Amino acid sequence: MSHSTYTRDTFDQVMVPNYSPQAIIPVKGEGSRVWDQEGREYIDFAGGIAVNALGHCHPELVDALKTQADKLWHLSNVYTNEPALKLASQLTEATFAERVFFANSGAEANEAAFKLARRHAFTQYGPEKNEIIAFHQAFHGRTLFTVSVGGQQKYREGFEPAPGGITHVPYNDLAALEAAISDNTCAVVMEPIQGEGGIITGDPEFIKGARALCDKHNALLVFDEVQTGVGRIGELYAYMDTGVTPDILTTAKALGGGFPVGAMLTTEAVAASFVVGTHGSTYGGNPLACAVASKVLEIVSDRKLLDDVKRKRERFVAALEAINAEHNIFSEIRGKGLLIGAALNPDWEGKAAKFLAAAREQGAMILVAGPNVLRMAPSLVIPDEDIDAGMAGLARAVAEVVAAGPDA
Ligand SMILES: Cc1ncc(COP(=O)(O)O)c(C=O)c1O
Image 1 (cartoon, rainbow, N blue to C red):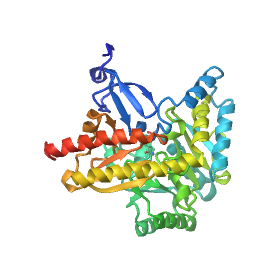
Image 2 (cartoon, helix red, strand yellow):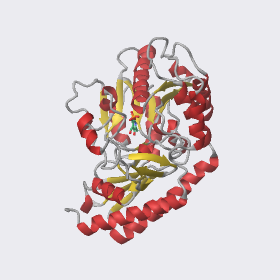
Image 3 (cartoon, rainbow, N blue to C red):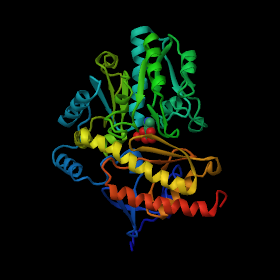
Image 4 (cartoon, rainbow, N blue to C red):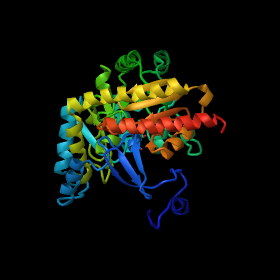
């Protein structure tokens, strides 16, 4: 039993009310297990929203952080540093990219991407070419530019006036994209799998078609891989599974395995438009963040680990199908690798949060993606026995919620 001064009630007394955290307070994590203030154990299928790619307190990440902590914490970009140069070298070796910009979060990586796309069009073609096309339900972060490129009106409401020159079209609708794009388009921005929007996978033909339309109109194709990147889908980045190469790719979340870091990757030609003074960040390329991310990337780049992600997905899907055979609550299991969505059928529309809370009571931490989809984004190295134990908890939770009925 804990006797901490701080409880869930403290949150309501001292924090801005923009979040509504669960009733427990986790205090310790190891691998895919987490313990709360009362010593209760949970299996973590949430992974800090696709962040803890190697689970909690992975010994090699702890070592990378502690080793760097004894050397150098921060310089700013008045100086460069070895961990940042090493991480950028790893990223350029492993991907299409030739140049890297470091940020501290997904939103900041996207902010850099959108600014670069505009700046590049401005320098290459002139000020008219500034339009950005993005997709309904897309999620790109919470800064004003990223909520504006994002395709969910609720995140913009009350924050207007928003930046202009942004058009949204339906995802996976190539004809709509073709109708919207023009020579004034500077960028088409997409998640290869929409995450917050409900785990919707981009159709291969749609993604290829988007690439061709961008080429035709000299627009940049920007892939937001903040959620899909760093091994999540069983490849290092999701674009590698599509046969399409973007011009700009953003990565964050799992890149630091729990240490805040983001990056924008691009080609030498596009990067050239970000000349000295055009963009920046005090913390971008922070040595602590880069030392940890460097180790994450090294571990996740292993082919065996990536293949295991695909195998572990099958274990999750089999367990979800078994739950569905008994309770008939899911209409579809979606996603790729360990980005897993279970869409609720119409009887349970809007009730995803009920399942999340019930699962937590049964010792399984899950996520939702909107009101109708249960989402899981666990550690990429979650042991099979933890998958089974967490799924048993979820099965108990589903039985309980179903017994009470959709209107309980
Ligand atoms: C696809 C995508 N882009 C951007 C973001 C924003 O990242 P951050 O919260 O680190 O700013 C998220 C976060 O959920 C995301 O899923």
